[in-house]
Figure 1 (cartoon, helix red, strand yellow):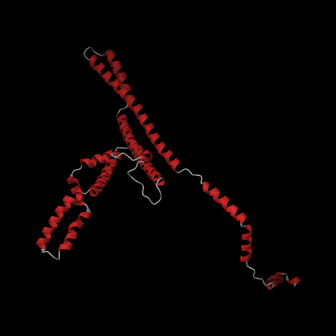
Figure 2: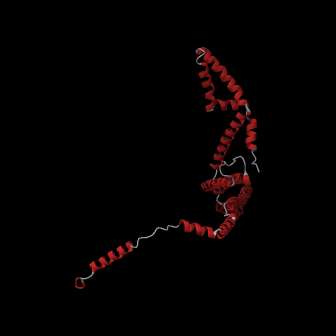
Length: 291
């Protein structure tokens, strides 16, 4: 399943010709155009002719090269990558530190999964969102930003103080004058609305937290599935084949072993010399009374 690249495609559609000309002008390979032209024309032309020719070559290169489809695709990929990096940095800056660390861990897991599902020697295709992992990371980022904003919103308001204000306004309503009573009623309505809003925000924040946890658990599950041990059926057949071959060729193996055995004779004198040496050593260790 190929990942949706609506953002990159939309960005490439709105880019005008001047955008590609600007990218080509600041690219290092652009310097090769006047350099090669100068080397070729330096011998046959004077300085004025050389500068004029270089100016014409520069204009032609800036007018034609950025319009080539391969060049545009190259610059589109570069600009899309820069846009994605800038967007990611802007989103990550709105997340809490804990969620930033968790996102980095999830990204490393996704990279390992991509490499494990890609044949060796082939670089994983960044434009393909296999198993929807990129969408999971995007959803995690969006939810993490929302959770951070929700926590900040709740931290600005102390629900306990709202309850105290509500109790105080309720008591004040009983002793308020006719002129102040409408204002007290208005403040009571606002305070009750703030309490209801705080409760709903807390409930929604709890749901977002569970969604974040579900994404983390799902990525971990995919990792565990991808790196689970796989039974190698070929090993059992190889062992059985080797065992059958050994039984069928047992006589041949024994014959080869006997032919390759070392039949060199051993001189018995080395053992006699060894026995005499050991006896002499024992005699030297005996006490003087027994010598």
